[in-house]
Image (cartoon, rainbow, N blue to C red; front, side, top):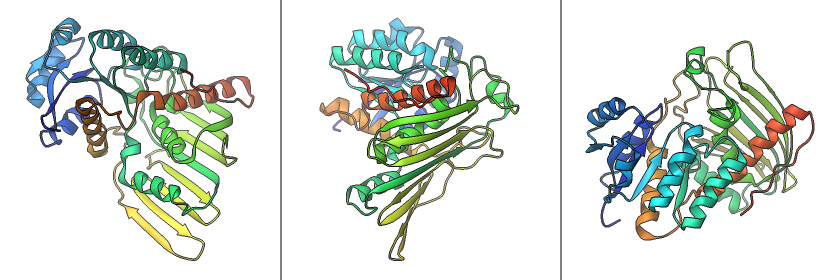
Length: 346
C-alpha cells in the first residue's frame, strides 16, 4: 500500500483493544482515525488510551468524516444492522466482527446490502489467518493427507459466570445463541475452510448447571460432509480451566492435528512433521488471552483490498456457510432430527 488506510472502529467492547493493538502493530499500513461508542465518555477514554485522533460524538459525525477508507464494526450482533446499513449507504467498506448477525437470514441480508452497494465487506474470522492453518490448507491441497475420511473438532473452553453476567451475553436476543455462535464459530469456520461444506448434522445442546445463561454452553454434533467424510464436534465453555481448540483430520495417507496454531502431521510411512508453536487461544477464563497477530493479518489484508480494489481474503459472504451450519445445529437440537444446513443464496 502506498499510503496508510484510515479506519474507524465502531463498538468498544471486549475485542476493541485487540483491534487497536493490531492496528498499532501494522507498521503504519493502517491507522485508527476515530472510534465510536454509544457512550461518548467510553469513546473518549478509549481515544486517550490508544492515542486515537478522534472520538466521534455520534454516527453522523463518523459518516461525515471523508478521510475514512473503511470501518471496523465490533458491536454486539444485535446492533450490526443499523450501523452497517448506514455505512453502506455512505459508501464505506466494512470489516465486521463475527458473527455477522444472530442467524443466517439476518447475516444474508447484510451481505446483500453490501453486494447491492458494490462495496468490500469482510469478516473477522481470524483463525483462517493462523500460519499453521494456512500451512495445513496448502498441504491438503497438495494431497499430502490423501482423501480426508474422518474429522474431529474440539473446543474445550471455559468461561466463569462473570462472563455471562454481562448484560445480554449468552442470550438469543443479543448474541443469537451461546457457545456455538460466540466461541465455536471460529473453529467451525476453519473446519469448513479446510474440509468443505457440511451436508448433514445431528446435534444436541445444553445449558449446564455451571452457568446461568439463556442459550447453550455445551454442544455436540455428528457431521457428514459433502465430500463423504464424517466427523464429530464438541464445543463447550464448561471445561475448566479451558484448553486450546483442535481440529483432527484423518486421511488415507496421513493424519493432521491442528491445536491452536500448532500443527503436527503423522504420515503413514512413519514420518512426523511439526509446524507452528503453542500459544494462547482465549480458551480459558480470559477470553482475550491470545496474540493480535491474526487480527492484524485480517485488518491489513482488508486494508490492501480496499486500497487496491481486489477482493478481501475473507469476504463476509464466505461466513454465511458457518452461519448456516450453526443454525442447522440449533434446529437439530430443538427437533431431535438430522438437518441439512441451508445453502447460502444470492
